Length: 369
Ligand code: IMP
Ligand code: ZN
Figure 1 (cartoon, rainbow, N blue to C red):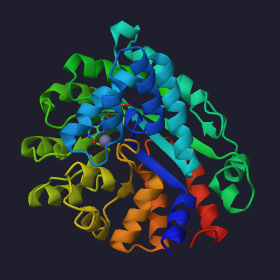
Figure 2: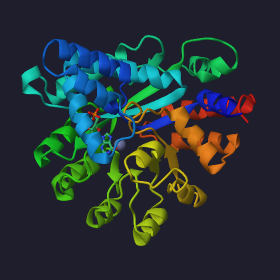
Figure 3: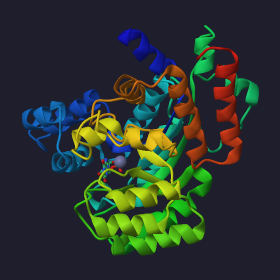
């Protein structure tokens, strides 16, 4: 029964709206990169190996780990490699639309600028081979689109899987106002290259809302959609400010008090729910007590997401499975949840039309209940 449900969750076409590039890297790749740096004497492989393989991480431990990940991954070729792998991994589990977010990085020692970092990401997207990644510059063909989504697999036709990929640029909370503004301007510059939005993320106990506000307001003025990590820690002043700012989407919304909760619900701002991430980092006390249930019962717009599939050893299929097994959602309810997420994507209507068609096709053919 459990195995059948897990399989069904993998087969379900899914939409991923909250995945950090460097948090979604496979353990095996991180270990390989660590081994190479160990051999070159840059790090001590044995120490790093244990950190990578450790399960169950607190919030501060996660951010220490990200610093390590960035040592391992931040050169152009590696950024290209991880991008290619991450897209392939999501497509393999039938994610049909992926919004991947990443923090453009300046790294003088590697001759890296925010722009060259993003060029390396774009190169990775174009290098995806095992699946058909539909990027910003692809021509959409409706017949092909339907035949090469997971629908093709469910029909018993084995064809290359198709995944639509778009990018969000993250502002790291450690950044200055000027660096945050650079990221927004870069997002604008790359609008025709698949960048569809801005994210605010990073260690929630670092930095001040006022530092990023000018950049977020600039993005708003430019008409760039924004998603914000909200309420990972109980920072009342900031939660209030974020809700007042009214971004297009919110991530997490863990530590809201009654009043903020009311405000969120009346705002109808779609929420990116990351169950495993929240439980592992202490934002939610347990799966059973996760705020997903309250928002779902209130019919609040939601999408299930992984946050950092590599870091938390999860997958989007697993997140759907967890919702089913913890909150007793039926397959029909899971299907509607996945289908509903299309509406919260930052992508243009043309692509949304194709994504809606994928779900309608699956439902019409009775491939999913
Ligand atoms: P990157 O932007 O591709 O380097 O992905 C890793 C980065 O995403 C981290 O350094 C954080 O800034 C951000 N990030 C990943 N997971 C979380 C989270 O749970 N909360 C806040 N920020 C996060
Ligand atoms: Zn996140």
